[in-house]
Image (cartoon, rainbow, N blue to C red; front, side):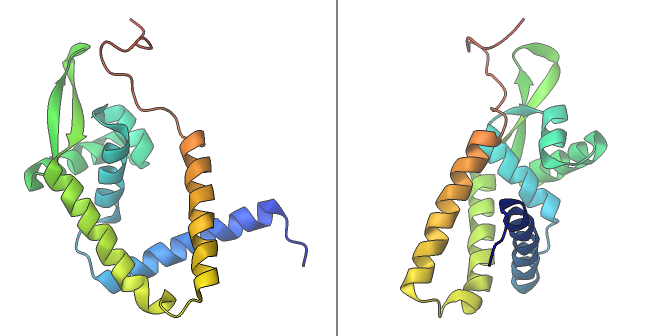
Length: 156
């Protein structure tokens, strides 16, 4: 079988969406996927401006505003003054938000466990290696988190 890298990447995206959807349905969560995606972005980037959060979460700025308000109401995120611009604010995930995200991921993984529990050890090792490769490539390809005040990279 001669599968191209392009075909494999297309299959990866399709299967990833199916696995995520299946896990979310099995977990019966009540929060929107956008809530979890936004918390994940905040966890990864640290404090971030609303416009950048909207871009990274793949939502409009008004939707990002609603998401941040919802997360703040839940105690999962907080708004901070932006030290570079008094008119702007940054949002960051709280310890409560980190815990909620970790619990959701555990819930998703638990929901998928019946599908994968009979995998032979060799296949589990293949998944472990594939995840390591994917994480390395995605980390290298994502834009750096926004610079913090005092960083040498901050342009004024």
